[in-house]
Amino acid sequence: MSELKEPNPAKLIMALLYSRGEIRNQLIIKLSEYFGPIEWESQEFEFNHTRYYAEEMGEGLKKRLISFIRLISPEELPEVKIFTHQLEKELAHEGKRRINIDPGYLTLDRLVIATGKNAAHRIYIGKGVYGDLTLVFQSGSFRPLPWTYPDFRLENIISFLNQFRQKLKEK
Image (cartoon, rainbow, N blue to C red; front, side, top):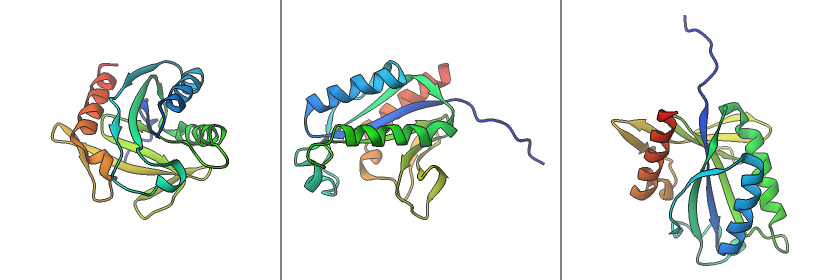
């Protein structure tokens, strides 16, 4: 029989999608005030994998990943998603989002992203939030799954997340 135990702390990460840098800067300040200092920030890259966000957020979208010094318990993810969802609304203009925030957590084994959308591969984790198992760590690196979003399949993103994992392992 297995023993029940609490999970190890996880690295809080967020994927930020935006069209204007000043919105990102405002958001970084608000996120840091709430979650504490940012530990790492990826380079900005073009987000051109889907047109899903173009009508609402405009053209020329950019994406960046950030991680925080603070570790979280995986069970905190619904509250994190609720907070970031409120920030998206707060920073919206005329009812349209100007930034999309996808919070998640990274462990030594996996990357889980929070979403409000249900799907067969997503597990309900509470308060209207689902956990999307996005990447798994196998054979020395994070690996995508059949449903992993195209931007999380990119070599530079996987490399960045492997670096996050190493920082977590050192803690």
